[in-house]
Length: 339
Ligand SMILES: [Zn+2]
Image (tube, rainbow, N blue to C red; front, side, top):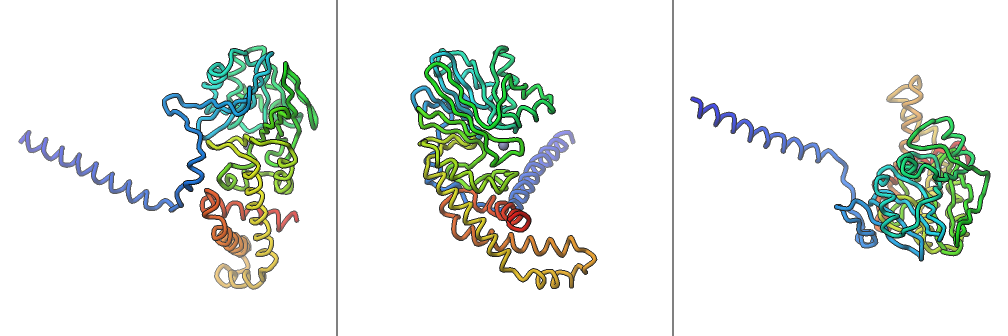
């Protein structure tokens, strides 16, 4: 009897595993299908050792990028201490170790690229280890952080309007405010002697921008940022995400993509017989449900734009099928309400 019970229990257990395995497979089937990462993009990835959890790589003499494969931070040695740019929380525990892997100079200055916690909320941990750290930010960022009172994003010790030049040891860093992404302000971080540029959440090399054109809150300025980047004399750009470094050609192809998304969306929007689409939708929802009627109009235009963009870009950049529709939607908001 006991043996039988054991057998039944074992059977139930194995059936359960089998059953849950089947359920899991069915659940996976419900997920959308996306094209795999393009081989030419995959080939450019910096190799992060999963055991170590981060990679520190010298890009120019004294200029380093640190990445965990998802986020990027950077630093420069000056002879008088290190200036560190950004502290993504995913990298926070590795940052000072990564600096120490590369140089014996201590970190003395730290720069916030913008307010978003996914890029700077490791700063609290750095400050704990270096209490006299000088933290620099532009005014909008400083004001926002003053309101937030977030111990993970300590207040800057110094802030500025529009631009500031940091000079430390042998190194000059030019900071210039931009408005392509966050409402408070973004920074172009430029090392003129090194042809090195950092501009976070502008693009992802090899891929289309992240969702909603890199979450821009200012499409008007986002459309201008690529020319602003190309005005700098740089050959390496750190844009904050994934394991890839960007060059000038990445800025150009992202500009071409974004311009195509915008022009496509604008042409579809201006060429659609909007009253005809809404009248048809109203036959189903009635004019009482104006949100439903309007949503059919907007969604239809976004779908049309996304299909066109997919056709032209799917084999050129990664993520077209993942975020293309979100790019069209962001472009639609600008085309319909701003432009
Ligand atoms: Zn951001």
